[in-house]
Image 1: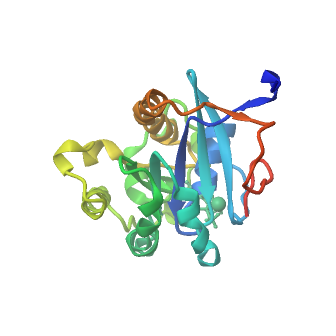
Image 2 (image 1 turned 135 degrees about the vertical axis):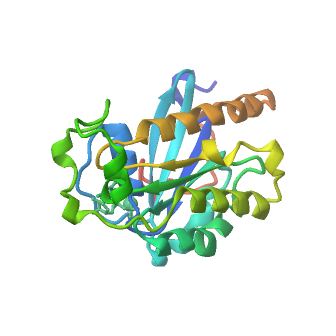
Image 3 (image 1 turned 120 degrees about the vertical axis):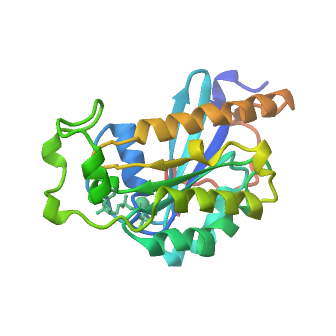
Length: 242
Ligand SMILES: Nc1nc2c(ncn2[C@@H]2O[C@H](COP(=O)(O)OP(=O)(O)OP(=O)(O)O)[C@@H](O)[C@H]2O)c(=O)[nH]1
Ligand SMILES: [Mg+2]
């Protein structure tokens, strides 16, 4: 008889981060999971992080934006309940790439996949500096981390552009805009550096994928992996899959 202790809890749901290299996908995940902004190296292949969200187990996949890893993207998106499309607010090109290069990778995601559009590096933009509290917002790092006004860059992608992209994503997926979550609540401007909006982003998405977990459970999918059952797939190193 199989030993019940040899059963591993498998993630209830998968969230995938997509976007061009250098937009800050890994930094956003570090900020959320480790509460800090630290040096990164460009991601190779992909890596995942497990988050316990109430009684649920969520895996968040950080993918490589570099062109050479592009072929892996659709594999990472397979069965995803949510995709976080990330661009750099100071790079119009990174916004364009989301539609040109990354959107088609989501063809393998769940039919009812949720999309969030995220403009990162808000701290680099002049509009953010004007809008933010000079004493530092609650839950963010101190103002000493923000840049001097001479280092600020022009915001190249506006929130309206992000909301328009959200509409085109729904169109691409053949989804009825009226039946989907509104663009205002699914487009975020963040800063992994100052922590601006980072918790809100991830926690909004976590809450939104809960119904898809419940649906999966009601369809009777097992929530554990039997380590003694013969496996046909190849094992990958925990936390890293290149
Ligand atoms: N100022 C600022 N810099 C950021 C922010 N987020 C990331 N960066 C910087 O942008 C660079 C790229 O960040 P990464 O998180 O490695 O980017 P990535 O999207 O994971 O890149 P790939 O792994 O190559 O796809 C690093 O130098 C980060 O320090 C941010 O919010 N503000
Ligand atoms: Mg990365």
